[in-house]
Image (cartoon, rainbow, N blue to C red; front, side, top):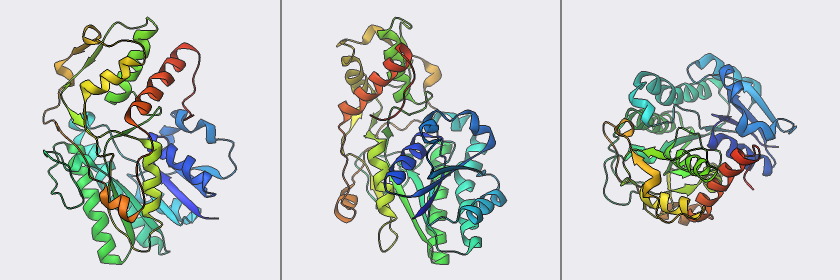
Length: 328
């Protein structure tokens, strides 16, 4: 039985990755800080699974990471933990750099010291591209526009550096925006679907957002974790852009989301608030995943509208009847 360690287990990607690996027959260890034990909604369905286990570790403490590696003996490590909210990175740039950037270094150094053969996946991000006006692929130059993007770029390059310096099997998945029912409420996609659910149920009158013209390439998170896994199943380590190749504005996201509660003109339900404008925003992010399609055999399975519908309906269910954030 293969063994995998996932950092960021309580987040959206971490919990979906655990689901995917457990279905593949893995023994899965989810690393969490002690303070994260209060935030297990995304993983509560795993608590009674005999092939899943929580382990205590912290991306700011290399000794704890080494101890986790020694105790769990993983074949694969998926580094999905970070301070991942872009907007917050301007308020906490030092913490973002420490967790998101240096956290990756600490995992890599712990693996190197551990000395056993371990395949390593780093969660890179389209935010590293930042200022761009066309579809990005693996050869596109980086131009991050936030402390989060800069920290992720350091993690991306140190992953490459350790691969080349120590002959480690390290890969980076440069993932474009991907969402699911498990997305945190601080992210704009979930803010929209949660707000629409509250409007539908008469709990809230309006949603306040920042720039509605921002354009993104949105995919469905359960599709994307398959791509992460496929990267570690290859004979040689390589980096890949993972994206749908479809671009939509935030306004189009609102179009799709509101239509699921029967509203075509949402203008009176949405307002703009300067507080949600970023100091240096990224207005356009779109990815070309041709390489992943050709070499991994990967392509997205879930349409944009289906993803948005699932998120809206799930939030309506949560608020109206009870809590269930499992992907159905």
